[in-house]
Image 1 (cartoon, one colour):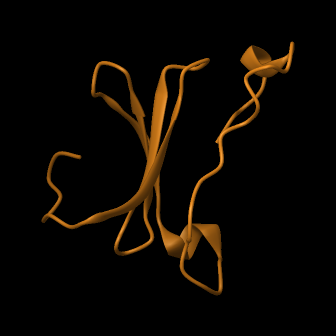
Image 2: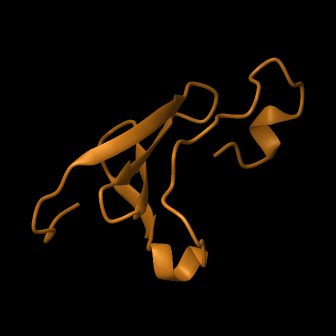
Length: 73
């Protein structure tokens, strides 16, 4: 999150299967971060086109045999 002005993360979830952390900040921006700390992407509330604040993230069930081939967050 280089260049960010600071903020507070309001929720997050770790996907062990994918080695990815998904977090949401207080401006409802979603960040996906690799295990090494590198930011994969960030998605703003405007791009998500949601009408309310993001309350949480739910990882896909890791027991699913096809979990590694699909997006999890």
